[in-house]
Image (cartoon, rainbow, N blue to C red; front, side):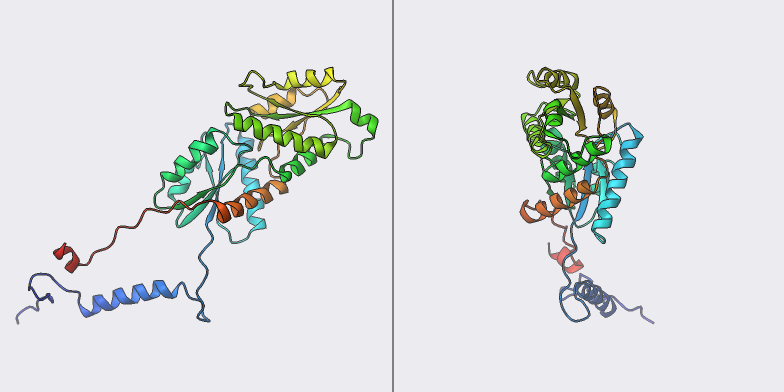
Length: 304
């Protein structure tokens, strides 16, 4: 018998798809479209973008444990939402690795409390380096009233009175201890957070830094002395850190009275991460994924 020849196009040179191949391709494409349609014939909504929480990273093992607990709180608040973690440095998974294994679209929410180099450069650059992924980058967490809720609760846990009288208020003050940044926007954000906390507590709140980088910035001991010079001898240190680490410990050790724990896995932090996620979905421009390379048929390849 003469072996059968593959089907060819009109030129006699390019193989055409067999009926079975054509039917397989049509069935596959139809199945993909049907996945977008529910049983009642309505189009299913597009899946929500993944929430990628971007943490700084720390050599302190308590930091990763704290961030992991915080993400579990986020998942409990929003069941079904894909919540992933990526670090800028020092811990795995690193942000580029997380983005490389995320499909579709994602909103990157910095687990950072103010604007600075990481928010303005590192995170957008990591997003741009994942061309397969449609991305949005959210604002940092602070300043925001939810952070004030968490700061207040941490101070109360450390011993801050819930109902001080006027005499108590005149003797008390708070140092808001932060990491520090060379970016003036970061200092402005921390100052605004201090103002919000001051209004909440009814006492002066002075921002200070573990690593003062500007001539006008105060270290935590210097801020304590400044408050004492104003007659504020009962000074607490509020920890403006997302998780335990070297800087948070260093600042707490400078407290003359009480020192609050870092913000950690507080419920307000979980709510704020979701707020920034939704805010970015509603307002931030979408950085589109790179277009897929079209799959050409043998006939298209032959005529290209």
